[in-house]
Length: 155
Image (cartoon, rainbow, N blue to C red; front, side, top):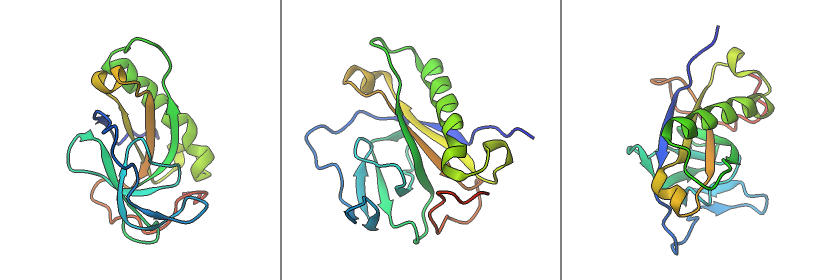
């Protein structure tokens, strides 16, 4: 049974010139102390709480063993010089995140109990050079928060 993608969140303009990561990290990049992390500083494997707004400039990065909303499982760039429009950016984001899901989770999206959420560039952030799509894995809406790293979970 094919499920719909959980959702798509628009990526707000990056806050250039500000500190990018207020978390405490191990040498391997694992978050050990919560803090704000800008969208351009988020890393694959980061566990995060999602902001209330649909325009995202930063997440709250959280250690994966503490309650959190989602986990970043992939980052990739959309190519091109001209902004292709919101529908095309959304489609490329959803397709790109779906194709990377199984490699992170260890089970296909169609068989998984988890959902995909994407954060993608807006036209304004595109004009400033932003091309990155952030792929997040999350539980179903209304489910308890995650409390573990989902890499290789196989569910």
